[in-house]
Length: 112
Image (tube, rainbow, N blue to C red; front, side, top):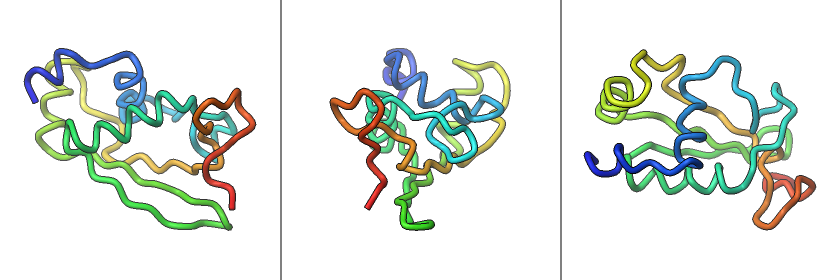
């Protein structure tokens, strides 16, 4: 994980910022803003690289996903990247507000 933290890509950093920003700026019904696919895809990769946990469920006919920081990743990111504790440990995304691959904004992933 040492090398991973020091070599985070811009999309990975953008995804991890969801844990540190208030409010969440995209990927949720509340934000009403689509998350670029490259940021979402980077988040999926962080499940493997940083050990984030991911679960999913359906809400109102739309697929939702929860990403959660583990204690080790939280501590390392807090100490080495952000300098402050995260605002939240879990981020809930509504995939209706996540762009599909190759999409310019209209191809959300979470619609049935």
